[in-house]
Image 1: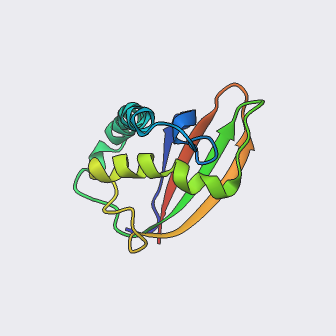
Image 2 (image 1 turned 120 degrees about the horizontal axis):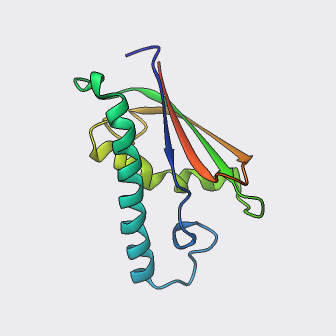
Length: 130
């Protein structure tokens, strides 16, 4: 499916799941945080899935991914951290049948961008067809 472009908006991951902040935390706290974040991301993806319901017969098999983290006024992030921030949202897109896989065979490239939006911190994942 070439020429398509879909944008999904997710909440930013909780501190327990951020690479630089999860060191030394009990695995149970991380597990709970991941489950809660999966629920939040699942609800967001489902809302987007309804907007593209007319495409219910397809599943994205090859695409390019652009992740844009819109941080609040005092939040910080390295662009290299965005790969781990996208793990749970991508798992949700795969589980809901929107994306065939989150492997390199399906996601051909990954671009990470960090921006500021103090009013609406979020993670936007855009999938672009080849």
